[in-house]
Image (cartoon, rainbow, N blue to C red; front, side, top):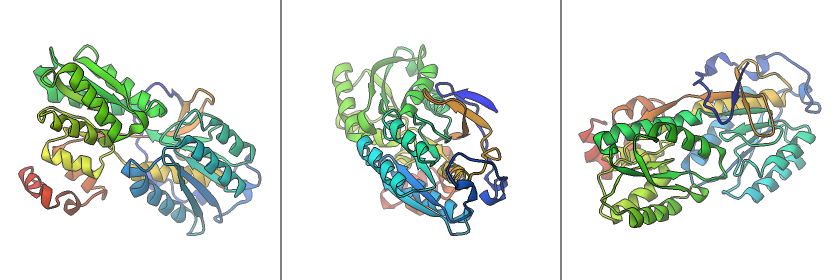
Length: 367
C-alpha cells in the first residue's frame, strides 16, 4: 500500500466498482469487531451525515448508500440514518445512539473532524468499525473514502486563472474558503493557493462559517466594501452553495461579469453555469464515492478485509495508515455538462433547462 499524508494530495485513483462484486465474495479474516466475522447479510449500517444545507447529502449520498448496502447484502442489510444539521454536539449524540442500538458498522461524514474523535473511539471500543465518509475524521478510523481534495482546489484555481486571462496581472480576487471545522476546506484552500499564489493578488480571504451561503454573502459584501467593486476581477468560491450567496452580493453591487468558481455540481450551480453567472463547478462522482463507502462498511461489518478496494492509505493527526479510496474529480463548465452530470444521471436536461433557463440552454446547445 502507498501511504498518503492527509495534508498532501494523493494521486487520483480510478475505482472499478464493477470489479468489487458482492462483499460476500471477499475473503474472511479475523476482526476485533466482536462477532462481526460471523455475520452474514443481516447487518445494520449506521449512516451519519453532517448537514442538509448542501443538496448532495440528502439528494444523492443517502439514497445511493442505502441502495448499495441493499445490493451488497441481498436486500437483507439495513441502513439507520441521522443528519446532524451542522451540529457537532448533536452528531456525537447520534453516534452514542447508534452504539447503543448496536449497529454493525458506521459511516460518518463528520461535522467537526476533531470533535467527533471521542465518539469514534466509543464506537471502536464497542466493536463497531467506522468509515470516514468525505471528511477524514480523527480518532481510530477503520477506512476512509473521499475525493482528492487538494486536486479539487487546484482544479478551481486553474479554472479561475484561465477565465481571468490577462486580468490576473494587476487584478485582485476574493477567496471564499469553506468552514474551518471541515478538514477538506483546508485542503481545497491549499490546492487553490498552490495555483493562485504569485499569479493573482488575493485582496480578501475568508473561512466561511458552516459553509453557509448567507455567511458567504455577508463576507462578499464586506470584501466589496473594503476593496471597491471595480477592483475585484474574480472570486474563488469553495463550493456552489457559497457561490450562490457570493453572486447575489455581486449582483447587488452591480458586478455581473467576473468569474466565480464552485464545487459539488448542485443543480442551482449548474444552472448558473448555463447562464454564465458562475464560471465552473467541480463535479465529483457521488455514486462512486457512496458505493465505495457502502462496500467498505459492509465488508467491515462482516469482518472481511478491504484489500479488494482500498489500494491507498491516509494519515490523520491521530491514526496512521487508514485504508483509503480517493475518487477523481472533473472541472464542470458549459462545455461538458452533457458528458458529466447528464451522462451520469445526476440530472436530466429537463431538470436543468426549466422555462427560466431554456433560452440559455438553447444558446449553449444543451437539449
